[in-house]
Amino acid sequence: MDLLSYIIVGIFSLYGLILFYITYLTKKKGEKGAFLNNLINSLVFLISISINLVIINLLHITSIDLIIYPFDILILGFILLFLPFFYLLIHREKKKVSLGKPNTRKNDLLTPKELPLKYEIYRKLSHLIVLGIIFFYFTLGFLVQNLFVYLFKLLPPFFSELFFSIYNNIPNMIFTQYLVVCLVGISLIGFFTAEFIRILKPEVYPLKPVNRILREKERHMRFGPHISMGIGCFSIIIIYGVIQPIGPLIICTSMTMAIFGDMTANLFGRTFGHKKIRNTNKTYAGLIAGIVVAFFSGIIVLLLLNGLSILNLLSIFLLPSIGALLIGLLDFLDLEIDDNLTYNSIISTVLFFISFIII
Image (tube, rainbow, N blue to C red; front, side, top):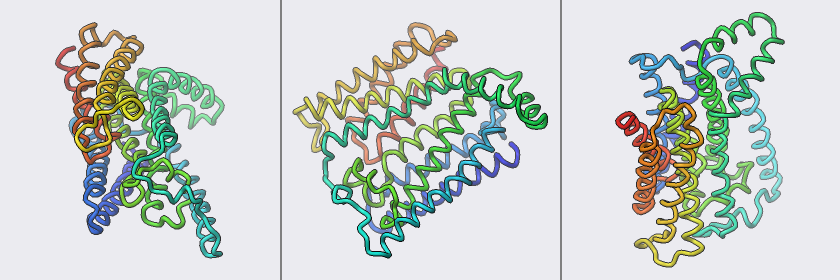
């Protein structure tokens, strides 16, 4: 790892420490559910970074670094542009407060225990953005690589030669690994920064309309679902994505199953379900529907992405079966930890290690 990579690791670690600080404040205020959720999110984030460093620098299991040129420059460039811009948004909100102008709308202050169906649909559809990771891994990433090749030919020799010396003799999937880490890392920086302000300085939070898709328990000290989703995706990408070619395949399969399984269980159960699971808002109809959709979505992804013939026919049916059952189990248990984190982390971990046994 070079100096810029260590700087980026240091920035991510600093954000992780702020996550822990907010977790401490949550415990101090006695919000037990939020404390547990925040603690696990913080631990997963920092542990995943540590595991990545151990895999690369100590065990030498792979030669794929966390991030390298030019993606390290892109991440640092985003930070240098985003933080001043977000500060201006905060300053604008702060000015409204000082002038006595209302900076919230009535709907943004509502805290219903159960979201209206419209906002629940918005919430679930927003998770489909994660599918972009699959396209960047297996399709769009190759187009971006070709674009980079064209652009770097136009740059001075120092930059172009450095780029081509790194990427001329490596498989395409390694380039897309760095690209995906860059894109998800940039997203996390934006999510974390906004979330810290939402929790620590809610009066100057400039994205108050986003609160409409937050459930009542998520509107205080608890990290929002986008934070759990971001940490869940980032952690599995920097741990399993470096083990190629099986890593990206398992990552994309797990995330697809988690997204469609969770979306189906929630919306189908809410619309057609009647028998509740214990004293929760979840239903058995939603549970079964989520398992079925997760299973078939997993098979579809493996059939579409298994172009490298990594998996045999048995594996293509076995891995989605195990993943779908895990989704059903986690949905039934209804843990206090956000399922956007548990689904991605647990399913990808189990499927990753099972894949090495059955391949």
